[in-house]
Length: 268
Image 1 (cartoon, rainbow, N blue to C red):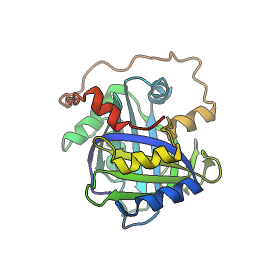
Image 2: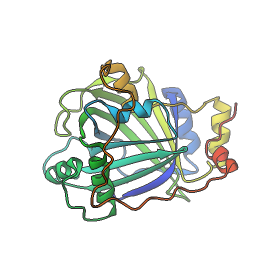
Image 3: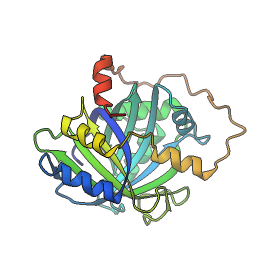
Image 4: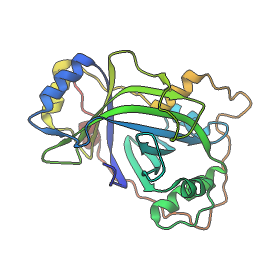
């Protein structure tokens, strides 16, 4: 998990109870194996403009949206890995880029002043320069159990519980406490796949009458915070001058209508 740096996949979300989760995990046993690290705490700090432009646009559910964050597995301490991530979503497909960086390098990348070392860093610096200013906006941590298909490691199912958030102490080095985003006994299940879901999980979701949901951790946290942006236009302009190291355009795949339906399959 920590060694992957480029992702392109569908991410389909479901809110499940403890009982539903236990049944799903039992159904997964013939097909999937648990991540060797077991349950791990994932800590994130989301970056945004001072007017929260990225998350406000994301909450409008446009065909294209993006988020910028830093991540650590467990509370960050000197010598541990920190990741800088750029997450984009276009027409239902998630594209994620991430790179390992120490705190000083992270600050330089997200300020748009770093000299990029590779394509991923070019995209991150380009994004920072494009928005003009990115600042820490929201802290989110959760406890995750991840599972991988035995015959296809690109197919994953994760369960996130104890999702907590705060709008202050925006550092990965701080404690992982915060306000709960889910009801007691709930988990957020995410199915991550490059194409259509396997038939066995589609049948199980149908039998349990589970339906996909739209749930953004950062979006939910921001909306609950009651942050006021009354003085800022909903679609404030962003910097239009391209930086020196603008990345090459990334072509998006021409998924057919049938493929999109299969990947988002759920039975009514």
